[in-house]
Image 1 (spheres, rainbow over the protein chains, first blue to last red):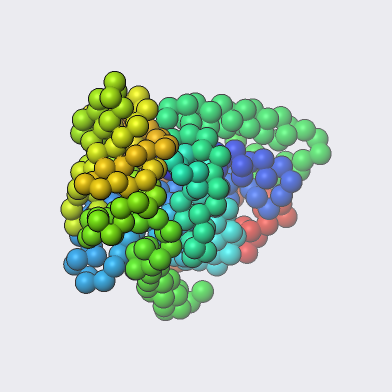
Image 2 (image 1 turned 90 degrees about the horizontal axis):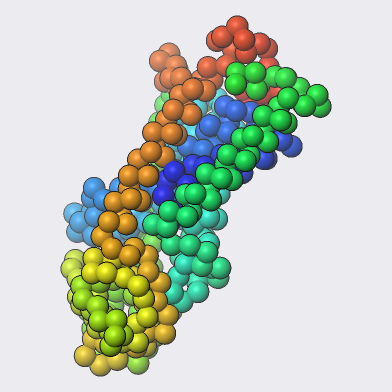
Length: 172
Length: 177
């Protein structure tokens, strides 16, 4: 996967553009969606505790990489959405949107055999990848920053235009 | 949602996450049509002649000869394998993907290589930038939300300041506050 900062910037861009059409997608929910973009990055917990160590400790197979898949995002977003009380439904939708955006971007990274990881798991299929980048490539971050910056500028214009109700954005 | 119901749903979801991680690992060999690192570690010779995709850390590389020795991690250890026909700009400590055909004596004739990290420093870059991302998320999130101690949940900050004004009509998801 690309670095977390690229995930955050790209999710911000996608959700902000979506908010131009969806009035319900306010800045509050964009913030939640951007946090959701970090869900697949939770697999970096492996830096602290290796999956193989956990597996030996609990005596059954275990791989935290499952969290960086469609199934993982759908479930972990559910856990986090519980922290939003009665607003859990929009929270869940925003978290899944952000996490899903990260998965799609991860699905574009390079694999030597031309097929991405099992990011659609539990669907046991490796979709083809255009192999656009490798995870440690600084160009990914540069591109993500450019896109997010462009969207932020455009968003300010959209917010100022008359056809948009002023509510929800005035906290800028 | 009532507190006890919220706790119950949370426990069920966490159990499901754990189950997903177990199932994901248990079915790994079945999902991959090429041999996995664990299978090669267990019985390499059974897979000679097959195509495989390996992730390895470069130990030695000879660009002129087009060979490299990489260290491949698997559950519970690691093994080394010698790659042939490698055309990759990578230094020892770097991380590569190699796709090719497995030969006898832990060798692989590579048809495609992807350099994931050119050297050991590339990983550090990734983690440093990810840390910035994590801080950015927290800053963005807590600018819009705060923890409500009474209900133990996140509530929007919106409406707490005079400048925000009434936005329930537009805010959609926030209108059930």
